[in-house]
Length: 387
Image (tube, rainbow, N blue to C red; front, side, top):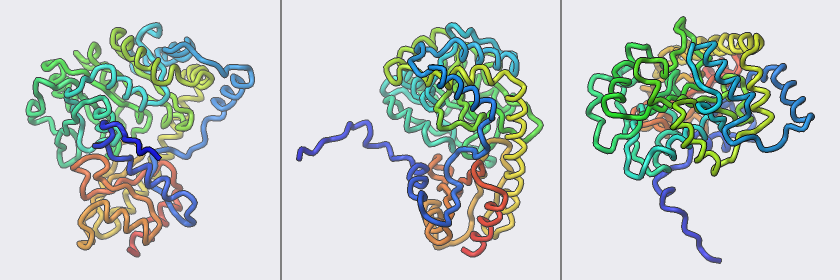
C-alpha cells in the first residue's frame, strides 16, 4: 500500500487536546466531564419550533453565499438594538458555519505566509492553529497576574510582519472581561500599526458582573479595521447547528465571502432563517437572561468548591462558563498535563490542561461548567479531595 505523506502545514499543528479528552471520555461509566465548551440548557422551545416548521416546509437547500436576507437583517437589527452599532445587512454581514469558520475565513482572507498574528496568552486553542494554517506566525501577548492582556509594553510585539490581533472576552479559558480603558491601548496599537482586529465575542450574553458587554467595533477608531466574529452556539445552546457570522467593513466582508464560498458555500439555511427571526424576540431576551442566571449559579458553586481544596486557587470568572483554577499541589505532577491525566485516570473527571491555551496556562486546569449540574459540581469536589 502506498504511504501517503500529509501536507507540511499540519506538521507543527497538534490535534485539539479538548477534543481528544472529549472522545476519550465517551462511554466510560461514571465520568464527569468539565472538558467540552458547550451549555446543556435546552434550546429555546420557540426556536426549535421555528426550525422544524422551516425544514418541514422545504427550507433545505442552498442559501445565498453571504447568508439569507432574514438572517443578515436579523443580525443587523440585533446589533443595532443591543449595541447601537450599524451594519448594512446587504454587504457588511456574512453568515458562517460557526464562529470557528468565521475566524478561519478572516485569517485565510487577510494573513499571508510569514505574517504575524498577535494572540492573548492564554486563549482559545483554535486561534494559533488557524493562524498557522493560514501560513501566519502566532505571537503570544504576555498576561497580567489576572491573566488579562498586559498592555504595559504592547509595542514589543510589533514587527514589519505584524498583520492582525485577536481579542476574546469574556475569555475562553479565563472568563475575564476587558473594560473600555483596558481596551484603549490595544485599539491604539492596532491603529498606529495598521493591524486588523479580529474580535471573538461568542460569550457576549454570559457576563456575571454588572458590566455591559462591549462591542470592540464601537470603540473610537476601531470600526473600520475590526471584524466582529460571533456564534450562536453558546448564546442559544445550539452548538450542533454550526451557525455564526462575521460583520465588518464591506470591503473586508467581500473578501471573506469569496473565501467562504470555496470552503462551505453557505451556512445552514433553515437554521439561518430561524435564528434570524428569533434573536429579536422577547423570548430571546428571556432565554439569555435565564442562561446567564443558571451559569452564574454554577460559577459561584464551582469557584467556592475549588477554593475549598488545598492546592487549588480559583479566581471568580467575570463571564463565559469556564473556571481556570491554579494548581499548586502534588509535587509529583510537574505539568498541568500530568495532573489532568492523573485526575482522569484516578477520579474519572475531565479537566483540560491549561497549556492547551498557551504557555501561561501551565499550572492551571480549565473547568467548563456549561454542561454539569450543581450536584455534579459537588461530586467533582468530593472526588478531587480524595486525590
